[in-house]
Length: 284
Image 1 (cartoon, one colour):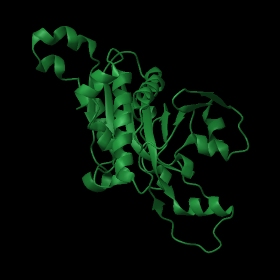
Image 2 (image 1 turned 180 degrees about the vertical axis):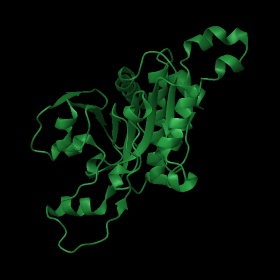
Image 3 (image 1 turned 120 degrees about the vertical axis):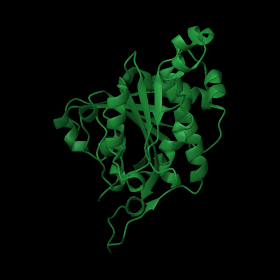
Image 4 (image 1 turned 45 degrees about the vertical axis):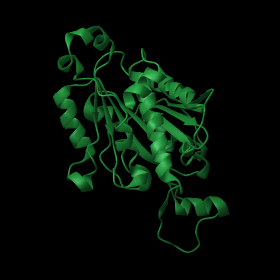
């Protein structure tokens, strides 16, 4: 069977040999699984390079919940240790704003606080407050079909210009389990390969390419029809059929809610001196 997925947790579950790969479970408001791949050789079994892959599983992110604030804080707590303590961070939204299941990255950027310019732009009376804010730059540059530029090429030009200490790249993902569709967040310190889960391989965003840490953050918004059929029947398709990607019926609300959660979590991770109420007020 050919399973299309971006989630390390799913590829690990389908791999009988786990040598050099460890799992750690925790979490209060999410079920959190941290997978550590000791080296690239160990990661070949699951098609993942050396690094950490943190999966946060919960209820559907499209539902309204009273637990949202706690979820945002828990997401921030998982993201913050992967980032350098000081320096400017570039937050990049990958994907196509005009295609709803692929719009998670750009929609998330609408809520991430851009602060790199503030010290120069605002009055001296705000200086004490501004000193507490970490410099953050935000970009959502579209996709290759819209711009003729690979996302990695565009972001490399930006990082060369502004010299951030790290990149956070947000993108929509693919999964191979209906239970994780729209319910899961993956954070990886290995970067991100746009389109890999739907066999649309683009240049990967990695530390090797940029020369600085790249943290990939995403939510699965699509699943392959072949994967659904084979999971339900337990057998591969007898007659070859064209595959298609399936997305939830309430994908509009899923993208809106998931983008808001990711933006809140990223803001709290980058500005730990802020509370949830402060972040929401500035995002409004």
